[in-house]
Image 1 (cartoon, rainbow, N blue to C red):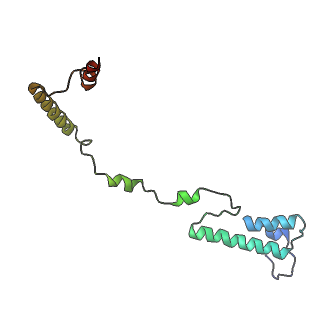
Image 2 (image 1 turned 135 degrees about the vertical axis):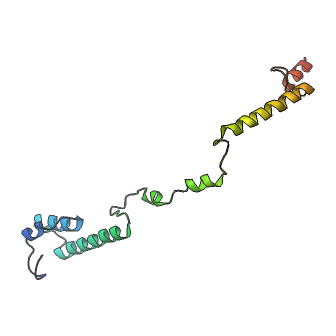
Length: 137
């Protein structure tokens, strides 16, 4: 930019620089014709902003200069759904429908055996509740 720090900055030399947040701050200062803060303070702010941006890019941080709440902290955490899914054993009945068919056949054969012995489930409306209601009358 300038050879010596005491030389005034020219807008032509600054126009060649790609404006990032720090340099754009400096450009806006020069365009407005100065300010009450002083050039040294503006330069210090620009340098610290540039360093913060570089640090964020290098280390993969999210830059939040305004301090507004964001959900980045939550989104940065690892997902744990896969670990929860691994906790439960794999259900083989979903892989092979014949396994479920065998279980159903076994259940029906057991039910028919109980019915032959008279131990099967009662008909609809003739269970314990119906017996209790009839006794109360």
